[in-house]
Length: 382
Ligand code: AMP
Image (cartoon, rainbow, N blue to C red; front, top):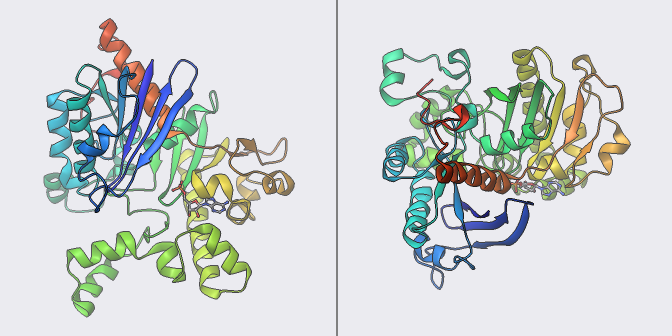
């Protein structure tokens, strides 16, 4: 099947056309600066610029927030569209854009099945103990305040590369960062929460932060929601701490040249990851595999070695030579026989979106969608 795999950002539309029989990428591209002068005005106009739309059998849409209802990828119909729209309050920046592309796609490719693949879906099976915040129950219930987790497509793809391994800790370290604990192929805990702000420190987001800091800032600086949103989503993390950049390559170069705040940003980044590994290790009661993925996880031997330093009590040891040589390719970087295998595993979210779309579309065609429990949706809130 030829699947168009779509990933919409607020001003961009990335696409890959993939042959799911042999995973060949037929086309790859991005339409950028949507809404800016001289560029497409809307995601609908951007969609029309994707080449070879006549040669597509199904479309897969990455959707950021599926709430607690969508535990698997689903065929999009009007009802699914309406449910994605109803989830906008939980993802005000992302779900509207995802919806715009879904609507454009269904209008411009009306005869092919469209499938939604949710970033939250992989984490819908985590226990109430793991997803509940210690807030007044009725208040949280009214607003659906709970931890959902994100990057599910990436964590699930990486987990799929270790069949038969029971306990995995996966580290998605890119511009956004999260870690997940995976038991027998299912996510049992993850670091992101109701929004993608919780957990690890990221390129421009602070990660875990005492909520009291926000209360004080509202008093001291008179910040409103918009100001806090800007600080927490765009001005914090590696960028805010270093004052230089959110690009880890730049920070590594500056830290090596003696820039103290570049070094501070990297050390906080790594410390937070080490804490997350420790807590997920405790949740799993061990780990057979620790896997690094995302732009930083795949390409930075330096960050990997700083994260894994002096973790031998957890069975985590690196082979320094093996680690040093690995950039952007799959490799084991722990010595043979180490209790926890440490791996670099490049993620491939577009491929997983395409494979899900092909599978769900195929079941639709052959009428089997209700026969496979993993395809059933929605699976009810948990
Ligand atoms: P992603 O969001 O997965 O595309 O990852 C983006 C992040 O990966 C940015 O912080 C980049 O600086 C980082 N990155 C990409 N290549 C390298 C590299 N060779 N060394 C360190 N960081 C890298």
